[in-house]
Length: 301
Image (cartoon, rainbow, N blue to C red; front, side, top):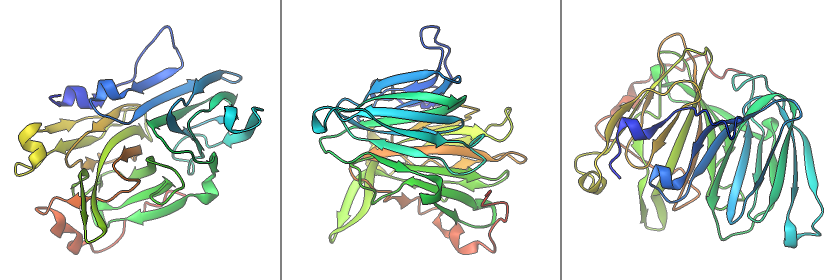
């Protein structure tokens, strides 16, 4: 696939047959192997039913509050189990998310206790892991970078989690700041002396802003000397707006947040390892040595 800004940015959809759908990404559309992604909305009492099939899946509340009922089928007694009160934040800027991990072979139903929006991401797996509810108080919140590269990271499903492939983080970038910077990539699997140097990962950035007219800029590019560049070069500047997603199949992918707006994105990653191992573009890595202070606008809460 030849990647350009047009097919790297996915924008909200209007589907009369599925009015609750905000955005959908399939591996076939993205030109990759693993990640499927949806953002959806539900009115109070609204329901969404789904089956994980041969996938592991994670449900993330963006806003609203939900009950999730599910059955593990032939790997349990077949009875339904449920978690109530998942979520509760007014929006993504009002606290960390709940995230519910479900293994393969699960039939489940999401019911909205309060109106809201949520995301679901799933990837194929041949492993079985236990269902797992990650609560906001369980989420490690950290501040990364410095100066105009300061941002907040919420580790929803970090490396080392008891899952197969999925990695999820929430990132907040204050206005005028950059994130995913210095530019880094994770598009080839490299192990050296028993240590993972870089994982080969697909990645989705799903965007929201603290004001509805907000937007960000994201560059996705492969280095000229990279084998990836020789076979499928990418150099695109994307402008995601509210409820847009940027696909990162290969290459570096820094983000800039315009002044006056806090940029949020939900990162979903999956690939050769349940890891965030990456390598930075050596042309820009020096900037980390220049940081003088941390932007006190984060953490937000």
